Image (cartoon, rainbow, N blue to C red; front, side, top):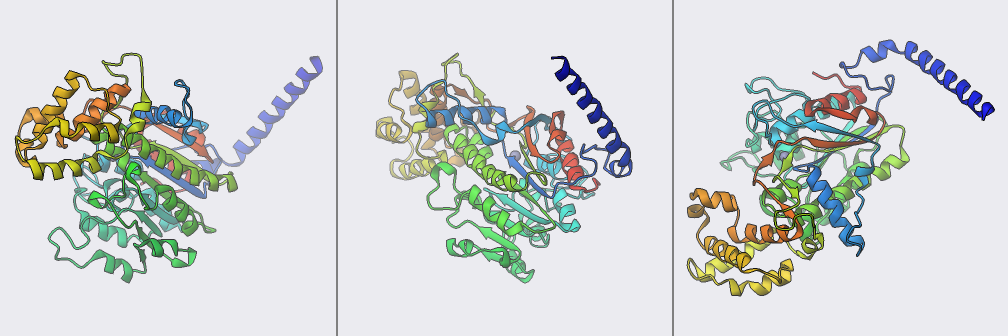
Length: 493
Ligand SMILES: [Zn+2]
């Protein structure tokens, strides 16, 4: 015992001495950082992955763990493991924008990409909409790193746009696309473009501008399969997109490329001696949560996790030079694990039985409305479909009365329906029957929702790799950008 204690004591003294020598040898490098100590004495991360689950808070993560457990085991208490939840460094970020405690994706994206607060709806600019904030992606590109932007929603959406555009409103899609094709970034992949010829369809097609700027535009399965490091700068648009130029929900995905596919392809396109920065957004976690559809939400979280798995494979080959940061931009839906009707129980195997997203189900309701019209709906027409597509076989009289009322509301055209404030409380702006079906199914599983918009809760942050310890603690979303800039050797501006 004595000998071992002596040895440990000597080792401790040696470590303190060595640490002291290193610390005194590098003060100049450390002070050059933007007020953030990266803890690595000037060593910079060469490969940086920034994963943003849009609308992904702790409830979405926990729900996905429990749901994954139902896929992997019949033990009702078995909890699945998400790769990023095991990262050694974890923290929490506050998400408020400059003007509200409940942010949205433009203000949140601006904070995460540039380190500055702005007002809701403003993209990469200050609240007065006169000052442009430089993003870490733009700085990385200037420094000679390659840059990639991957998202499951349209490439001009707020979260990806925050890394390359500066617009007074996130809705300036054409201007955001112009910024995208003029960014010089090396790899854009995922969804499409919302207004490639402008809001009035009278502008030069941005795809043509992209090609003139040297981009290889791949939008068929073959063209995407043929991409290789020699393709130069790339814009890859998944064929067979769903609404709003977004990729399909994972629960609906047929033969489309996945977020993981585009992440793997991105690594291939971006890997080079000067390093790279890649932002990957799981953009439809947010959309599914807006619609209060838990089954669609957790499937998209798992698709996002698979994309992180691709980064982890790269990390395994370059552990000393790679940093992976995973977070969300805000929580969406006020998702809660626990519901008044189920109290201390959860039954997540129930959402396992859902076979399609609310969006695909909406299409069937729309067809039905065309056939039966207002006043012609009968819930009995739908009971076999609810059993088959949602596993809803045991419906109480209360469930049926809610479903009948929602079905009747769905037979009214959306324009007339949304002017009714009570309808907005019950159904948001969603298809009443669809959202009532997912509410009932989710509640039976033990999942509740409070809103069709976002909430203001803090969001977890997970980090692994060089500089990962910087992400421990409780800080602001703008600090994430400052920490990332610091570890990449970029100057916060
Ligand atoms: Zn968002």
